[in-house]
Image 1 (spheres, helix red, strand yellow):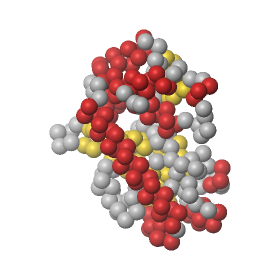
Image 2: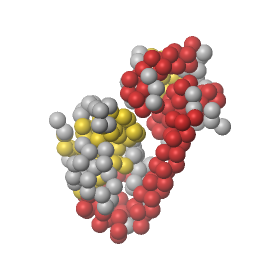
Image 3: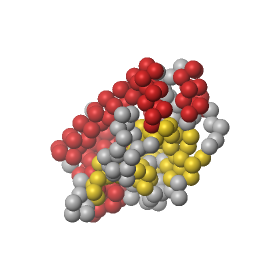
Length: 239
């Protein structure tokens, strides 16, 4: 069940304030957004949007992880992308969803009615500029992902995925030169396999290999510690 939550959360204290679509807003623009926002919370495994749905709202991910997926004609489901905190769901000017979006963990969205938000974009240069920046960042990320899927080895893919989650969930201002990084995997190994174009067995084997060589350590199935981020970057083929 979707929980539609109305709560008095100030934009200034929001955990994604400086990364989301509102990052460049001044005080007056924030007040406009704050007056029109509302929250929705989805349980893990719950659909957020189905392909073909009419999009009545756009939203920023406040917490949690969602997957963007497409169903093939033969019934296979392919994970095309992830939505992590500060990512934007929906597109101004687009009324129909092109992909399925589902909550992987519990997800909280900061929502805006689409028509209201579209009007705000035309009147608020800072929101329009930030949307453009985020769209270009998403394009760059898609190009990087094409390179990963087409050219990187299975080991490099797993290392790159771990670094992606680390970068996107790192606390602002954290200096990794003074300690290890710790992340919680948002996907099961089966879902990781779908996302990375690998088999479940390959994902498990590569994670075990990284663990054996001391590049990561595991607590349970989801909590990953990276003792040396630069060493993992070398395994990922990153400079």
